[in-house]
Image 1 (cartoon, one colour):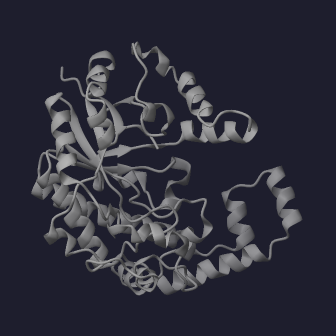
Image 2 (cartoon, helix red, strand yellow):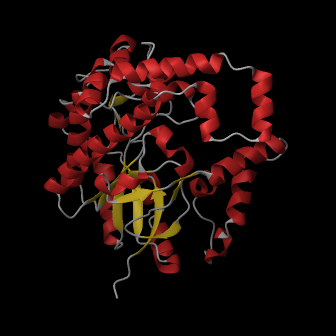
Image 3 (cartoon, helix red, strand yellow):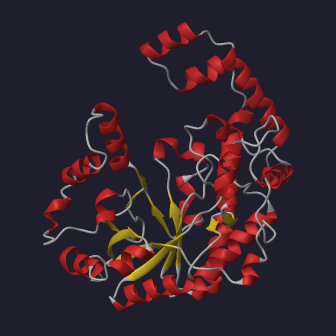
Amino acid sequence: MTNNWLTGIYLTTDEVLKYPDYVERLRDEIGLNTVVLSFTGQLSEEVLALSPYGGRTPTEAELSKLVIRHFDGRPVDPREYQQAQALCGPGVAARGDDETFRKAVGQLKEAGLNVWTYGGAWTIRRLMFCPSREDVQDWIEAVCVYWVTQYDLDALDITHFRYPMGSFPLGLFGCTCSSCTAAAQELGYDMEAMVEDLQRAREGLRQLDGARLGEVVRLGIGFFDVVHALGLGSGVLDWVRFRCDLIVRNLARFRAAVHAAAPNKAFGTDTYPASMALTAGHDYRRWGEMADFASPLVSHISAFAAFCRRKFPTCGKKMPYSLSIDLRGTTAWGCRRPLPHTALTSRRRWPIESPRPIWFCGIW
């Protein structure tokens, strides 16, 4: 019987090259067979020419035309413009070292490991490039195809193919630009009707009595209570479905392009917690239409570390990470010497086992 078990780890190019025996020991001692390597290479001039940035650093005014817009017309979050300006296009850093990246990939392949790469997509944290714009879609497709055809990779694990995190309220109400209006019509939705119902729901929320709402929450409130209290119209549910359908359509396009260019290469993306998935535009029932695997977004270790720092301010900065690592039992690997310093303090370094090809687990 074929062993389809996958044991993987997120690493950077520097870690691979600085500690060449690290992955070999993990391979031999815990069965590591996959490394997800952050992309630090350089795109070709042909691909760069497709960037919505037009080959230069965009101004804030230019960025405001590329990012998603709230239904009141404003950009959802201009505070991350500086981070966006450090890119050469949505999801890709402006500066890379292709020779070093290829060297790291080659070293991992020589060790008998599968190499995946992960890169960004539409969203930073709050800022998101409009997923309906044709220039943004053409760019991301070209980048994905370039990665799988120009490097000795086994899969693409793309992060942030979603809307902004659900805890950011403004991100729940974008995008309503002309490109998204056209996309909504193509997918069978009425943007004007959806926006009207969203505005009505917002007004209903404003009119709720805070003290009474708090009491109701303490007594217990369900989905239909929310529908009743806010007078939610069908356009609100349509809005949620539209955003999910748009992401499915776009990712299905990128996946098809990757498979056409490199039939043996896998395409996938990270997920969002199931209870919040729809707020980020992820429909898990249709995941198989747009990805070959899923990388669960697991933030327990970093969340625990943040909790410790709040509750125990006298702790050393590194202690919460070490404590969370001990609780996961990773000290029992049998490693005979300390792991790289970056592995001890970073949120992305610990391998977790999971059956492939459906799940690849990582600490994010």
